[in-house]
Image 1 (cartoon, rainbow, N blue to C red):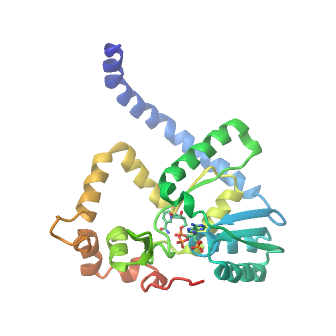
Image 2: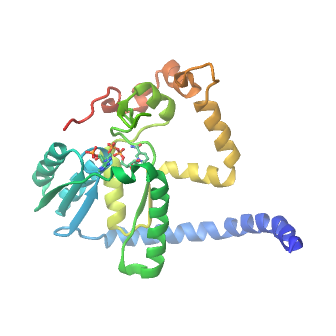
Image 3: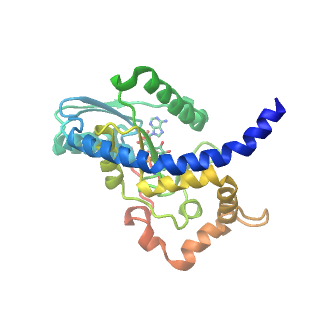
Length: 265
Ligand SMILES: NC(=O)c1ccc[n+]([C@@H]2O[C@H](COP(=O)([O-])OP(=O)(O)OC[C@H]3O[C@@H](n4cnc5c(N)ncnc54)[C@H](OP(=O)(O)O)[C@@H]3O)[C@@H](O)[C@H]2O)c1
């Protein structure tokens, strides 16, 4: 048994490397061709019902506007009802024939948020395999997107909502933050084309390649950028120093996230 694994350890990496080398170019060409076809036969969502959770701000809010422009009926869910009503009003102005607001709090599952995200992704991938083309499922992976999160909103230790732009600077550092309108446009357009995976901005996909092929490099970069010595404040991290010293924030972050301005309910 051990011998089989030793053999595979030796053979599988070069085999995979060369197979990918030959397989990837025609595969990418085929995908490009499919995406051209999908652009022509993109789904018409006019009159269809779209349920958006987390629609009171950020990506969810702008997805609502994008679907509204395409004439979809909307069900908008989140906790801040007043913000949802404002989003609903704008969505109607943009062309949605019917918008329903549902105040929803999913905080009871908040503790297992990350775990459930991974589980949900797995669940939808399985569903897609089982149901084939009958159900369209698009899994979205955002990079850094203009929203309340990238304004510095996070859940503090006492479970209280806090805004700290210094911590945001540490986390985002010199990575460009995409405008939320352009992110929402990309997501809706890809979903209507039936694409299975979407990364916005698209260049962010290369980070997954680095993670698969050189996970250690990603770990070292994280440590270098984000981790400080015990006697230092987390805000002394190199990630923040980089944005502060270069003044890159002005060019890399949209103006809306350079000052904290969360919606109130
Ligand atoms: N922005 C980024 O750079 C980025 C990057 C990677 C992944 N993401 C993911 O993308 C998703 C949207 O993020 P965003 O940037 O648009 O953040 P956001 O502006 O903070 O929006 C989060 C939305 O979720 C709703 N929400 C939060 N807690 C809720 C609860 N307990 N019950 C019901 N609704 C709740 C919020 O509404 P209420 O507060 O009114 O309930 C809000 O509408 C998140 O899952 C985030 O982790 C974002």
